Length: 138
Image (cartoon, helix red, strand yellow):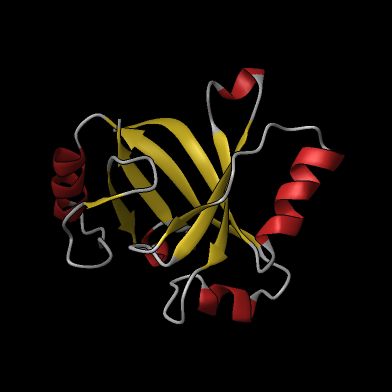
């Protein structure tokens, strides 16, 4: 069902500092910050060369008082891996198949537009070994 790893999301309380770490210390190509008010985060994408086949790192900083990553950063003040994003060919078929197997979809179960402009869904981490999974329409 899942396709390639699209990105690994890393929550941070200081996006500027984290972006500089990947750009200046590790020499990665880093995008400009993009506010995502509908998701309550500001994102920066870090391009990974070669073997990851187009996979990226997504740096996330809270945006607004009700940011969904604010509680994560309260529990993990130094930041850390927040979620993994996998591509799927058909997000509705993936959702329906997962629900039929007992997996829980977060929110109302309907896809929302993600940071890449494509439909996304999040799967409950308790159903996936403690890992928050994002599915993104390929």
